[in-house]
Image (cartoon, rainbow over all chains, first blue to last red; front, side, top):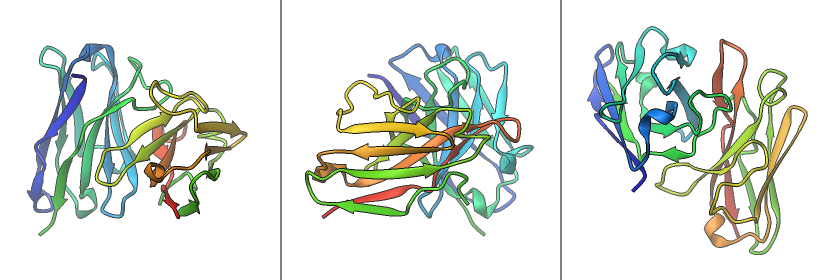
Length: 122
Length: 111
């Protein structure tokens, strides 16, 4: 079954860290760029970042640069989002999503996970 | 604040045709293609239109997309109750070293 499954969400205090994981199965994981997208409590979608199929390049939204790091382990079909210095505004439902290409040339997502919820609150 | 502009809501009766607009700029929709996602209540978003007008396998041909200049639109013809959902447009934005941007989403209500 082709799927993505996120894990690692939770409730954390501002300034703390959290590590999200996304396990891919049913497809050749290392053939695809992978993204993280979050959905705010208000319902909007915000792109967080992308990693190329081989991990050679990464891009991030400005608001998380220097705080979040995307990585992948293709031997384990795993995508990771390391989130440091969390802020209240990072609260949301975090999805991992597959890009149909090896790099985000067109920037769209043909497969989404169900998401993992992150709440940043004191 | 979303960079792409969509109407917050549209509504229609079963069988009607509704359209959702998505307005951008010369750094996003202008030079790049537009993609559309449907989000049913409690579910993850699902790709329904990519590269302006292409439908993934399994998406009914009632859904169609188009783009002109710095704007795009999604049309749903023969509206059905199961089409009631949130719809988001998205595009690659060449500014700020590259990123994906979304519209704020449009709630489609079937009356």
